[in-house]
Every structure is written in structure tokens, then in C-alpha cells.
Length: 267
Image 1 (cartoon, helix red, strand yellow):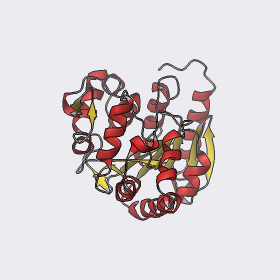
Image 2: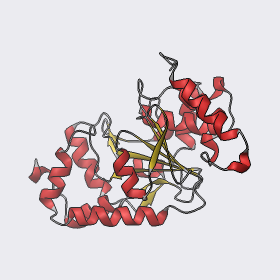
Image 3: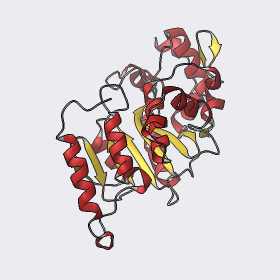
Image 4: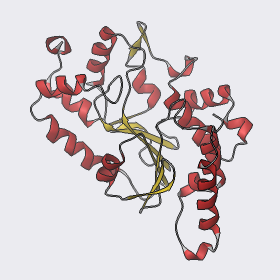
């Protein structure tokens, strides 16, 4: 498999230096653990890793995927019918954040239209990035990371350089940074923040722009949680524990805590 990977040091460097999709100056960042490989077979994965060796440091989500293939065809997001739940939950959050009604942001076709035309776009309102620049089938699969390390002895140094670049890229204009997945310590180390739990499996940082949510997959994050976060203002710009807001923060904390005491939340 190592010989099949067939990446040059320059290509590996560009893959590792890739920071994310969309607009780095966007008001909302989404930060995951690593990019998934979707339904690609092994041959497509190898070919697409090679294509990623031509990525710029940041790219429009649609433009980047036109360089990749699935089922033998370029991935044209604007023509796709189905998407990874991760992207769909991002779009649900963005629609809820924009003030759309529950029926609107839960409407599957409206969500998919948002993915097709607005999510991760170069001039849009979102930036999508990951803790690790090395794609993987799932978080526990370290196969590709091991292969990259075998090809490039400087990989760990390059990954650390990428982390520094991400921290520099995050500007004050970004109002909300949503991390998702069960790696709280890694997110905290990347952005020099400290988490405090505001409800079960929901955390906010000492920098109130940062939220840590469950993984964006069916059975992990719920529609009820998204609706509650929108209603309490957490999706607008985070919750600032400021006495000038009078009773607002207490109400918000109570709302979230009460939500998680209710079993079997609707999804």
C-alpha cells in the first residue's frame, strides 16, 4: 500500500498545508477531527489523495471537489442529491442561525440547497477545517496517517506548522467557532482555550466564541439541541458571561440544562 500511495514530499507538504474550505474571514468556523473519505473505493482514495497534492492552502468547497472523483466522475456538489450528514448538520446550524423557522432549517431539500450553493464557499459565511489534514474513513483509523509518516519523516513538524497557521488565520471577525467530536483536549490545545460544560456533551470556552458539540452525525447531535442553541443565542456569537446582560445568561444555562434532562430528544 505504501508504494501504491506514491506521493512526493511536495505533494504531502501541500496536503498537510491545506487549511480548509471556504472563507477564512467568515463569521462562522466549523472545526472537525479529520475529513472523511465518503464512499470512495481504494483506487479513488489513492487518486484523490494525489489530487489533494494540488490543493491551495484554502479553497472553495465546490472548486476543490471538482478536482476529486467519486464513481469515476468529478464530484460536482451542485448536482449531488445526497451529502454526508456532517455537511447537512452544518447547513442546518447555519439556517437556524440565520433565523429560519424550525420547519425551514429541518427541511431536507432546503438544507441540501444550502450545501450545494452556500456551504464552504470562498465568499461565503463559513469556513470548514479539521484538526488533522490527513483524510480518514473514521476517527479511529490511523492507516493513512501511518502511511504518510512512513513517506515523510518531517510529517509531525509540518502538522505542527499547520496548527500554528490555523491559529493565525482565525481572526477577530469570526464570531463563532463550532468544534465537533470527542476530542476536547485537542481542540483546546489547538486554540489555547479552556472548556467548561454548559450542558451534557455541550461545552463553551473561556473565549465565548467557541462551542464544542457532539459529532455531526445521526444519533449524535439532535435537532432539539440545534433549536435550543439558536433560541438561547449561542449560535449568534456565543454566550458571554457578562453581568450587563442581567438575567440572560442564567436563563440560557437553565434552558440548556433542562433540555438535556429530557430523554429521547427528537432528531
